[in-house]
Image (tube, rainbow, N blue to C red; front, side, top):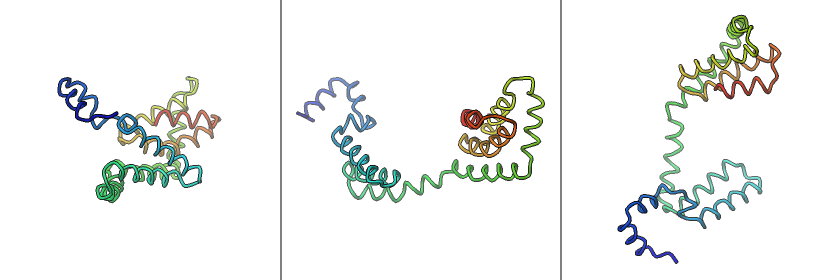
Amino acid sequence: RYDALSEFAHDLRHPNRAYLRNAAAPLIERHPVLFWKALALLLALIALRVPIAIAMIAVGAAGLTVLIGFGPTTGLLRSLPYEFAANWALSSLPTFLVMGYVAYHAQLTQGLFRAAKLWLSALPGGLAIATVFGAAAFSALSGSSVACAAAMGKIAVPEMRRNGYSVRLATGTVAAAG
């Protein structure tokens, strides 16, 4: 049986336990029944072929409504999508994708990869090594590893395929480097 008053009194005598039982504790520890019901509802919605994003939004909204009420939940659902989409870090992604497409279609990347192949031809997997170094530099300059992986995926994978690398090695190299 849960007795909040005795737990509060116990926490006053043992301040370290109060720190461990804060609101940042995982949901499964604070509300285990709600967690399992939400997980079952999510799996049921997915089994009914509801798109995963819609199922997750519905279960999250229902859980928030149970935990904090309808008013605060609707406020969060109105403000959070805008705050996420208006994030400055996400604005770099389309820019670097366009830059990758322009560099690829202007055939700038072929010259760069030919130079990298010549410089690193003595090493086994020289083009893969050049891809890793190029991705590291691109990621450091752009500040976005997601944008780097997307742009390098459009630039490096076709060049690596053209030079005889397998699809698995080319995509794995870009994914690990990005």
